[in-house]
Amino acid sequence: MSKKGKVEDMDEVMAEHESMEETEHQAENIREPEETSKRSVEETLREELAQEKDKFLRLFAEFENFKKRTSKERMELFRTAGQEVMVSLLPVMDDFDRALKEISKTGEKELLKGVELINTKFRETLKGKGLEQIAVKEGDVFDAEIHEAVTQIPAPNKKLKGKVIDVIEKGFKLGDRIIRHPKVVVGN
Image 1 (cartoon, rainbow, N blue to C red):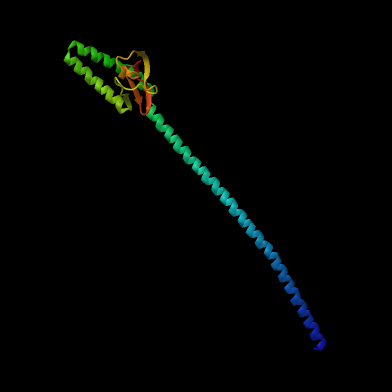
Image 2 (image 1 turned 120 degrees about the vertical axis):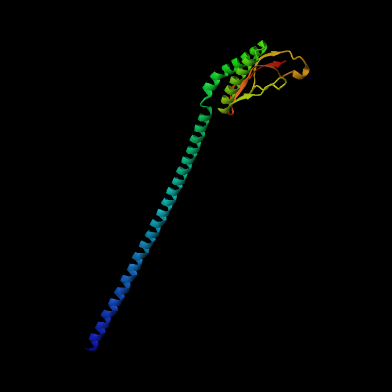
């Protein structure tokens, strides 16, 4: 080969080399935006995942609150489900008290003993269902949230002014709820 041919070959090789370098440079430029777009897509996906995770956690917390609320409401319903029945049985308890008082006046001990047994069993059954008598006695301070004042009379002494003088009807509560306020006479 002649010198001229070698130079031409070299020029071709150089041109090819420059062309390859340019192609590589273009490829790098192409790869950089691809990597940048991959990163931005990845970041976008991470943000979307974080948002979905947050939505899920909020929904889960809301569901847990719903379960607790309905459970609490259900327990309250069970606790007071028999309230109507209990309220309708309160006059029967009052009648038992009046009957015991009258039977004790007659002096018939066997009859009194039998009625007392029935009364005790009846009260214990209702107590087992959550019914409690509100303790009120003469001399207690009148509380309008608990007591129902039927009337006011002049207090027999200064100590009973503004206090309970007599209990006309017993009060009862079912659980924490008062189902019948005690009816009292208050000293004035």
